[in-house]
Image (cartoon, rainbow, N blue to C red; front, side, top):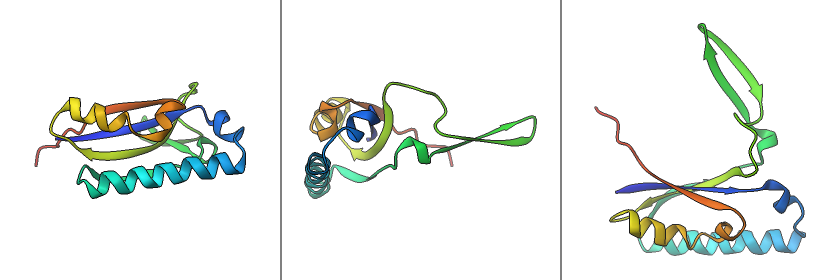
Amino acid sequence: MKYVCLVYYDEQIIRDMSEQQWLDLNKECIAFGEQVRGSGHCIGGNALQMTDTASTVRIRAGQLQLSDGPFAETKEQLAGFYLMEAKDLNEAIQLAGRIPPARLGSIEIRPVRELPK
């Protein structure tokens, strides 16, 4: 079964890091990604730019509405995701627990819903 592991953290924690701390965290994430791709668990994923680069699109009354930033203000922001293949939720939880930014924020695990063809 496929699971998306959504990585959330407070962007201010990242902004407060030294350049070396930021580089070290990225190296950990790269190493983790290589490990789970090598084991066949990781199908894909990406890091995301900070929320100040985000745009939100809505259609209301047939009109496109565009706003800067994420949909909602929260304490933690979506920072990236991993698309994982796991035999069940328990395995997905074990994999998500190894994602390095879990110690800075949280990892939301969501089963992928296959759309009908």
